[in-house]
Image 1 (tube, rainbow, N blue to C red):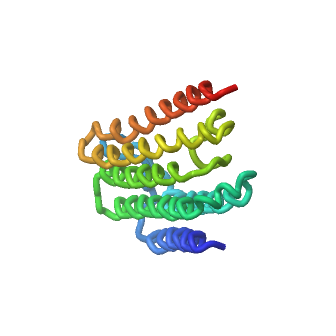
Image 2: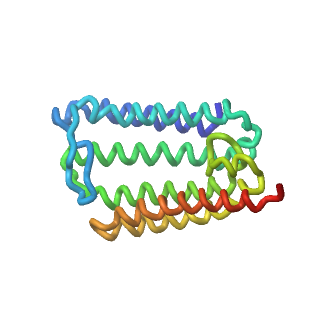
Image 3: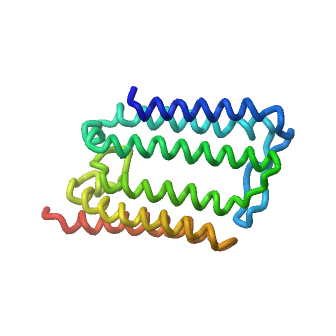
Length: 211
């Protein structure tokens, strides 16, 4: 087991332990979803409100641990494994941070969810840009279109520009946290546009390759 996996497992355990500690102090019905205006629009039972996030963390941890071991191109993943390990840890920390915020909300600390979401997603998108730029061709990690998976050249060029775009998305996402109700568009919009652009870009690059 790699060091990053040990740290990831500790984060999952911390998430579960946090839920157990605060469970007796929480109400029977727990706010679980907030709309773009920061208003609660969905409630859930106490059990799921406390333990769904630890379950999600555990599932994501298992998936991220398995991926480098089952990918047919796992030798390529080894070439950027330190960046992959960084993503594993950052992703789990973001989920843990969201869990702590949700618990604090239910304990009376009503912090606006928009800046929290913007900060978490912004940091995640920015690091995703770093991971994307260093990713080598594989079946699970990166911009996986039929054209990037079919050509090393298309993969490399698409991921080079993709890394830049995702880092920009991260910065824009953080800025969106300061725009109030309209911030959600700056958080999500650039990511969707980047995905569409990169898909089309990889297709065009592939079509230009010598046949």
